Image (cartoon, rainbow, N blue to C red; front, side):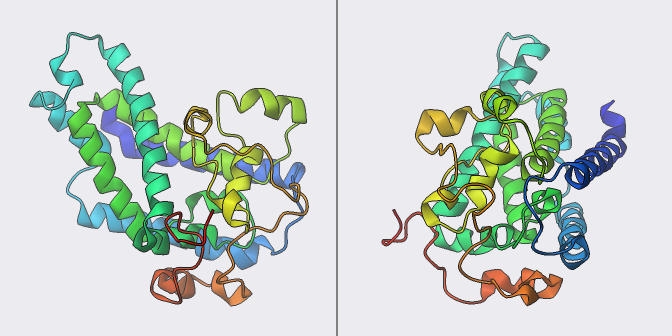
Length: 275
């Protein structure tokens, strides 16, 4: 399976993206402010740039470094008497917690927020937002992930499952899809739902700095960053941040330059005016 990692991941990415895009068309949660043609070309283009940057600058993938760590007995789990299945499950959970902490740091450190805010500057919220991340953020995230994988000694299968889940759930919880209220209330105990994560994309600072989870919802509840609903409700809430609200900011070149333009703003958690 892992020998065909790239093909499997690309295939699953395409299937989940198409599924979410179809669901959005059939049962949207909110009315779009901008057409797909206005937003999707740049959002998808930056995703392809991200892939090219990571492949071009890093000598190995997450699964590749896990394979090397396993062969050389690096990391905690590779030096414990534990089954591969248990190690894989533990790895998925710990890696998810690590990504939660990383997400909080991207909001807490002003220079990291500059990079991360391109993701939040999207003026609508749909499946394409789930792949809209600045190449610098993707590179930093991958370096952090590689370090965690080596230190943990996560098995390749566990890393592969985590990578697939993270990619798929990012598209799911950013999708503009409608779920029955009772279904959403039940699901969000086990997975981050679109309504749960949409709060994180609110223009209101305190709402932006909540609901940091991408896959497992437990960390927000345990660490006090959970906010169940947006103040204005899902239909009336404003998506985005105070900066970069002009529609011209949806253009690819302006998106890529956003970390280097303007002030940090009020969203970084450590900013003295932010609650």
